[in-house]
Amino acid sequence: MNIGEVAERSNLPTKTIRYYEDIGLIKPKRSENGYRAFREADLHKLAFLGRARALGFSIEDCRTLMALYEDETRESAQVRAVAEEHLNAIDSKIAQLQSMRATLAHLVHCCAGDNRPDCPILDDLASLDTHQR
Image: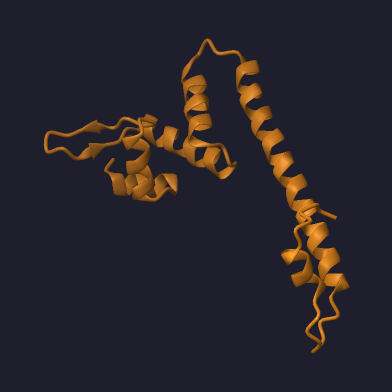
């Protein structure tokens, strides 16, 4: 398959596929004229990478997961450890977003939103007190 075909079948942009090749995540064969010649195995790796990236795994996590995927002697505990670390990072981000939302919701509630110039939102943003409510 050429890069256009594999892009269509994997639902990844050609630019992303080239990038994955540049950083060594995939290694398609090259024809005599230098064109990439993707195999079914490359397509499966690209689909794997697309799914992993859609779940928010970093490139380095993808590299680790790909190595584990290709290692038939791997232990599932190794895969689980990578996934759990990522899940903990997601939970942390969710907690941060919930805190941000609560603070902003409080500020919006406190703001009269009328034609007076005083505004608790701007006051809070300008405050040297950086604690979150």
